[in-house]
Image 1 (cartoon, one colour):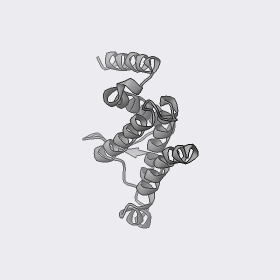
Image 2: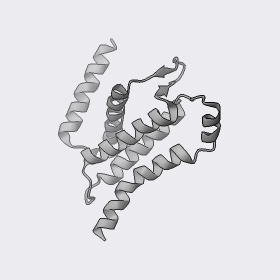
Image 3: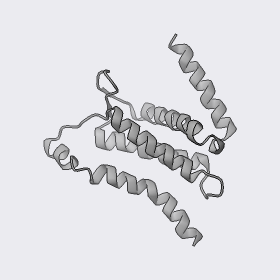
Image 4: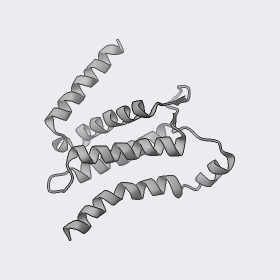
Length: 145
């Protein structure tokens, strides 16, 4: 019973990945034309929401996965979808389309998912991770001045 429950938690992100990469009706059109479409705001919001939901669900008290493991799975899933489905291309708002380096993408995804988890399930986020996030966010805000 415990093993089956643990397998379900781990298999959820792979199920979502299969849906995103294989069951998209436009997927065959994309492959046929060999034209890669960048992830837009709507795509990024969907992937971010799925990642945050996964983290909050699997890292809740009484579950088998801790926050860090849930974060790694969610971030890898998010990054993989951007890399494989969109060729690493992102187009946010009115900005020009850009190809994101895989390491930079992974770091940005982790930052966004931690921020989302702090907003939606703050009790699941370890204090040291929240503190590091807030420090990095402050540095980012100061760099924009």
